[in-house]
Image 1 (tube, rainbow, N blue to C red):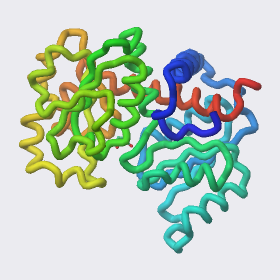
Image 2 (cartoon, rainbow, N blue to C red):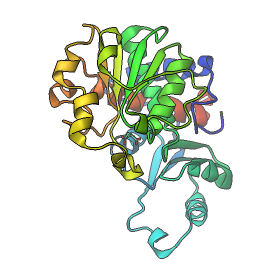
Image 3 (cartoon, rainbow, N blue to C red):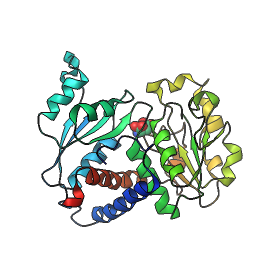
Length: 304
Ligand code: ASP
């Protein structure tokens, strides 16, 4: 693997291998000194052109746990405001000698461009509404840990699926690993390109609740126009919000996931977000381990 840009072309064996590697790295993260020398001497440059709390810090933590150095670019205060192009920005940072790029951008395909211009291993940390492959990995790891396998798991992805890169990567990961995925949203928030995907769609959440193993909630992507695709937040909550009453109708073993940032009181009630079914903080912890696995694979860690 020379880049990690999408989960669409990652087969089951490769996916399981990355999850196995991440599971080993979870053990490293539990050690008193949570660090291994695998990527000593390597430098990872992080280009986040869109806001991020979890993903950016998680890649930073992952790189450092492998003893790599990191360089962070932040668009505000950079020469982007002086009109520097994405290509010139990339080539400028490349000249400082990083061994890999981690890229988040609002434009679909930007990480592919950066991979091509730079010729060094590039990881997609979220491109527009397209892909967020390490999120798909960490979500799959979180479900595999809980259930042993995703084979036959019944998972509902609920919310702004149309504008969600998380949904696209999760669908690829979950279905490749054998889960049955239902996309639950008002028609205006369903993806327009869903035909041919190995998923079911539903316009109501309530009838599905008693048969689900996992509910995955997605934020309305206001920054991508998601807020204009339904009449009002209160109507949305009334039909699709995971309230305490709805969560109580799930089977006892069912779990709740969310990629963050959560809009409490909209797609998820605070009591559900903080309740016993919630795997939100487990997802965050697993995120560090899967990003370690991806960086390790890309940067030749196996030779170290
Ligand atoms: N943090 C996730 C992403 O970057 C989910 C979200 O923003 O709603 O796509």
